[in-house]
Image (cartoon, rainbow, N blue to C red; front, side):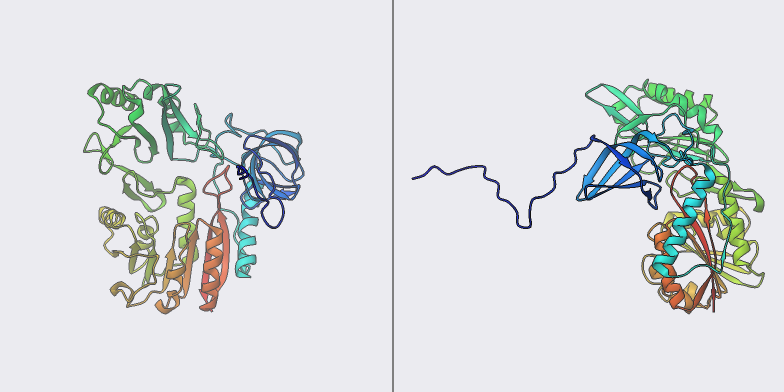
Length: 450
């Protein structure tokens, strides 16, 4: 009897499979154009390369971050032939930190890129162009971020604590001593944070750290084991030095060490103070947030006798300024704790013409009590998934004007198709530069009933 042959590999039908490109491989590429997310696109041997940090027309050396099928993700390691648009990266951590992917582009070119991304989605998906393009809504390109999450991880093999931001295209942590996009009050905290955390007795029990700057400065530490009295004292001394609140997140919800302390931010043009807690959604760019609220009110043009609906209302960021201008605001949010917080914010600002409700806004609008009287105008600010089920029923509410604030042009374009089908026309649209130095696009669109 013949000995069986082991380990044979049979040729799959359809020909040989192309060898996978290993992570870390370097490749010289010519960049043809930019993708919608700001990465350079190159084509080589039947594969499409998406290269972080590259510009159209450049010749670069790229390092592979990952590959699947005929798509390769990479980052720029070296530029042999630079585009005329390229500027020196303002941040020392450019190319390693994953936070700011287009800082090699001048700010006006970043705005142009985001404008093209919005226009392309509306044209390709919805087949429409607004009757009027609004100029970009922007603020300072640095020193804008009032909230940040800092990654913290104990490296058991190296026996050291890593503190910083996630690297581009991986879970590695890049040590950060300064971050140009953070607001100034958070800069000294960021620079001294790693040394302070390394003094704690159980670094392996530390999770992440969040930094906040609003009406107060705060530092939140996520920890997976109880803190010793000595560690707690180190944290309290650090926060006292920086005049910051200390919040801890162990089991349950985050809590301030001093129970009398609270966080919040102001909407100065409307003399409003909004309270929030770690974990609540707040816009990280205070200046652009105020400009966004002002523009939304201008576009929606609320009248004193009108009833207005605010969907995905969060803490009341739009609802409270709206309430100063109309007869009644009905505000709806999916997260019950946010509904309660928004109602408290309205009461603390002496606004009594607002009503807040909890509803699952990923589902079609039901025949809810709050919807029966109808609305003159609607404002919605959904998450990245958009608001498809909600917009399917908006015409039935009788609203003649609709302002849609979007953090994802793709879902805005998809929802535009449905709004146009219901008889709305796209009157105006424009980008909101909430995250300078990144390719993230926020937008605002005004729809009016035909």
